[in-house]
Length: 232
Length: 403
Image (tube, rainbow over all chains, first blue to last red; front, side, top):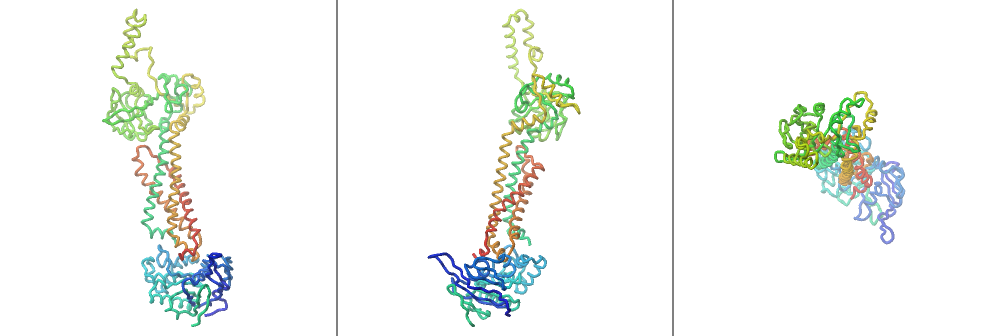
């Protein structure tokens, strides 16, 4: 599953909030890389800096210093972007959060279709692809339901389908199973592993759920802004 | 995918209620414009309908609408001798307030120069024009008089032989058309006792002179009917209207009549100007300013509505930005909803106005030109009011999806 070019490469990434007496180092010289087709778990206590790292490499919360390379391309140096971030996110990244964050006035299939259309896929084709993704994730029978008519697990599956709409190189998931029961939580984790292995995407999952650690190819741990790698 | 339509579909009840609110607001804007237009139209209505080229009024006055004017009846004959004049007719205009069937009634009495002018130019909705020199009237429907109904004005009864529509004065009162003689009788009618007292006064004045004592016949003559006395002036009319022959030079006619020292001549356009810049000017400007104010208020209210609708979608917009949606997608969502609100409000305002405006006491004139202006105003309001929402949407950061 590995290739020459890393899915993501992070070099000496730091994030500092405030200054002087109020300075907080949320992330301290973090350096790591993820291979394509690899599913990685990111563990750590609350306030360790996991979400800060995830949002920094997700290009929605710029770091204070350090470099982010995605697919071999330098995307950010410190808080300076070298690419159009929104366009880059559209093309290369997929996101899944604790809450599904589905658009409430769109049906399940429309939520996914919209993500396809944003990636310049024509409406008809986008609809077809959205239906296929929902089928792949096992919620084809709920595709015409609005989000409030779906269970938490179903909503999260639709959110995963949306994250896959642009065939991303990198999927970032921030505690995607926190709102789910253990069975559904496990299903979602297995889904990430399946996506990573079958579609070659690199998946980074921030989680507190220690029952699903076996699905990860790698496990990273973070504490007080410092990243370490745990061996199985 | 049209996000605006899908959002509306999802929150249709809120959208319908908002549209009704916008519609009512735009109906008021349309109504104010209509009242303004109605006021202007009413002011010049009679001048337009009466179809006179020149208005000859009392010297150095701006009558008969802007101020009182009195000219002698025989001015009609003098004017016929002016080169280029096809016809001349007397015109009387004054307002009365009487009681009819126990209710007050205000009539703007218009005297038509019978038999030259029988009111053929009146927009009748029922009945006929004046058919005799006396005791007939054509009433506007605003007066509430029915065809064939009789109304007592002074000592005489007048029968409604025709009913017009939309013939009102600049103050909004309905017009009543009579022969000039009847109009003067209604204006100058006095009681029998007053006539007797006036005759007695005349007798006393003659007797107080030497000639009265030596000529008893003169005393007897002084007590007779006033119209038979050559020494007493005949009643005056408000103006005399002139219609020129086809191809006649209006400047020549005006130049000749202007040379007469007892009258002043105005063209129909000058008469309209007196009304628009004189009597109705303040009301017109007030309504105009109020309409402008309403447009601004509508824009502010719509902007706040669009802004609130945008605030409701902050999380969704942040998500759209996160997954890479272009600004055009977000802008389209806000702008399309704003335009749709404006369009539905406009249509609703039109239909509500069509139902409600005819029930208003004064004319609310909604012209196709006015509707076009309103459509442009609504379009501009929709675009401008969405600017606040767009500004807010553009400021939303994708990381707000995590909040």
